[in-house]
Length: 157
Image: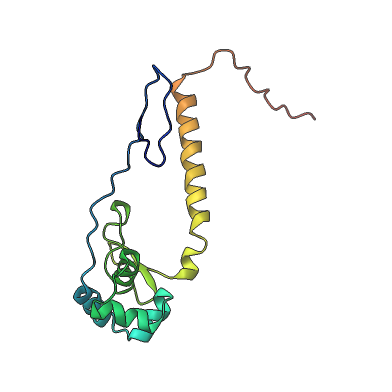
């Protein structure tokens, strides 16, 4: 008699039973409640303001700061971004948010109104790069001998 635990199906004779690989998670590191409290104070925010920013209740923020409840990493990261720390990710090295503006590594500030049409600037730059690439491809092919010269303009009296 074969004991099949829950979720296992009996394999036919000669059939190979494949086991599913389990996804290995990254080790979980809890956020220190003192760091969260310190970050909130550095931002100059009250518990009520942090609760509004993170869309949670004040009670939740109090529980986080007292260490009675685990702090979600996303909430901590958002609070750090709001306090002026650098944005996460390799593409954002040197960028930060402070005073309602996005600051570049060169300390140039961008307002939300300025950034709302940034997509248009990027689209124009992309089109310009594409046209330059096409022009270089035509130039690299050399002079085209099959081209018919454009007709000369003649002035008729």
